[in-house]
Length: 380
Image 1: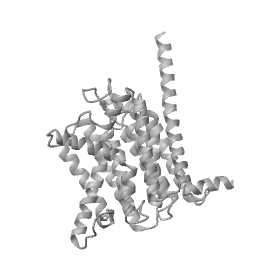
Image 2: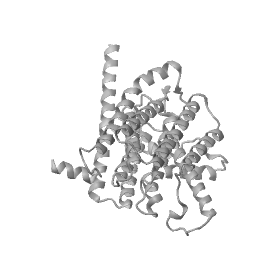
Image 3: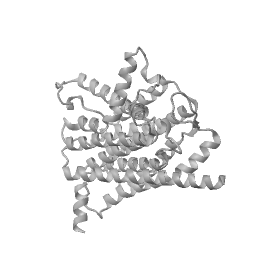
């Protein structure tokens, strides 16, 4: 028992049987189970009403695939957060408002993303809603302090305030789109979102005043893992813009809750490292499109993303997903070390993340084998 307590303390769990840890654990499990079990009926309904991505020259699917997975992810996330919040109320009024602001902004983006998935919206409209969601965080006190960025001179007065506002909007909108643009191969975004959420969760758990962030991240990680059970290649459903923007926006917003603020200099560096993969992917895509003379790089999809490049080398969606998961985990480990977390905690976190990903991938592959066997029996 003492060894188990010591193991838990390495992950930031002060009391293994305390109310706080049980609330976090239940939040994670609730999100995973609800998402896991809710996806099949959502998939069946989506097929009936035509909520699906049809094959084209840019997509990799060869048959229509339901694109309403984001609704199941959102349901699992929100319900689990409510459960966790009920078990461990966040007593600080300002934090309560900030959590509600994050949930409201996420709800808005899920709604707009789902409408875009089914009917199509203009890039300008989607960008406007994303900016509005970022402003919602700003007016509730969630922002990046420009003077907290290392290697830059300190600026006083209104100029620093304006730069902080611009930087916060760029961070939120940029990461929201980065996760969306990374969604091109089965399992990639779900796995990357799970890794980033889990790494941020363990990082936040090292501090006693990060209860709000921990609960949100536990719900997000659980929802991502539950979704992966159905999305690892061959996917039975995809998350669509509703799911990818939910992950990107929530991760960006939670990082503004003070999750990673040991020092002013580390407040932006750590989330940048942890979420380096989607950020680097978006950067190289945008720069490449601008270099080719494309004026609006976000409105001209192509196959220059990292997942397309890796897929061209591996020739296999599963290997592509696992390779990018590995890169994301390396980035997460680097972020944890930059935060000053001990090597033993980092190693335990990496092993737990790897074990969870292996479990859902193995379950999906086993389910596929059973489906194939049943199909052959029916043909015979």
